[in-house]
Image 1 (cartoon, each protein chain N blue to C red):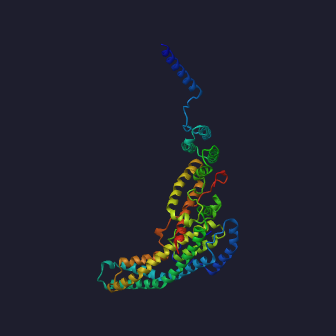
Image 2 (cartoon, one colour):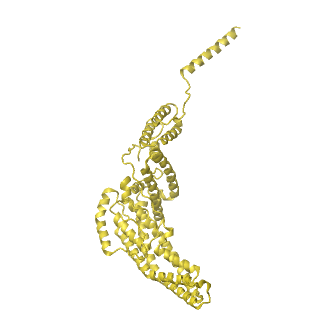
Image 3 (cartoon, rainbow over the protein chains, first blue to last red):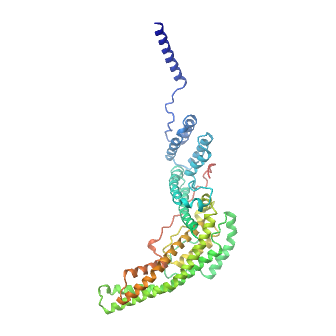
Length: 181
Length: 281
């Protein structure tokens, strides 16, 4: 009889303790769900809040959502907002400086991060000329999104497009010359 | 900057000695200006410019030798068509016309045979000197990133679009005119920026590669075509193969408008007030 009472008491204590625990650490209903809506500023603010909490592993999903939101209201100022957001991401330890630079320049700069390296073109670029050009073509699609669809900066996009065409021509000639006697 | 344009057969657009002097004079003053703005690209030293000019002169000489014979060939062929000789094999008048056509064809091959080696050598010299400069300046002297910076020329938007030459198609105009245009383009663009020079040098070099290849193939064909022409003289006909050689020669010398490459559209101006991100490379 005594042992039965002791078991009931223990079960009640455990239940109360569990309920009390739920009260002190409530589960977030929207945890790590990228922001909705059409206001980029609000979305950036919410993203920072989530990402600085426990959602850092979802960084790519948040960035993608922010881009979608920005596409619904394209304007030159968006470029600066993404720059600021990526800088914050670096300072918050979500991205390295190099990653932040790479993302920003891939989408919002005329120059190509696919065409980088510390060695000369004959030895570095020419052996993988087609691969480099193919990567640049892919990057141009991202630049179209960042420069045109998000920032409405068609001038910079067309310069990037022209830079790709010129690079194609110059690399074809240079790499032929590198291999010529 | 001169805008590329097409020329017809009657144009006389070769570089005059006086113009050449003017260009050389402009070049002397242009080089320090360029050096002060962008890293100096030595893609077109005087020797390369001279090679381009010389190739243009050789092409012009060959054209003037061939122009008359090719137009005679066209007239004779038209006469045969107008006379409906294709349906009248036994007609003595038609046989005579076909014989004349064959003789003119052989005359054209002889002129080509005697001129092509000089042309080939001139093109080859230009090609090699450009290859050397491209390899040194762009291939071994630059990283991929510095190449991009050079192509962008450190300029933005409107300024770049005003000073940059359009990429040009390499066909559709006479060979000598192409070289004249190259010479003018190089001479005039020296004062603007090194970045355009990389594009122009690449364009000319690739054109030299194609021209060199075409000349080599034409030379190979000439011996065979001469033999065929001599044989056909006995029969008094011009074959489709002979016609193909004539078209090939016309293509090299006077261009092939149908295969002209489209011109690239100039970029529109970028927003100069746009923000400069601290992340920007």
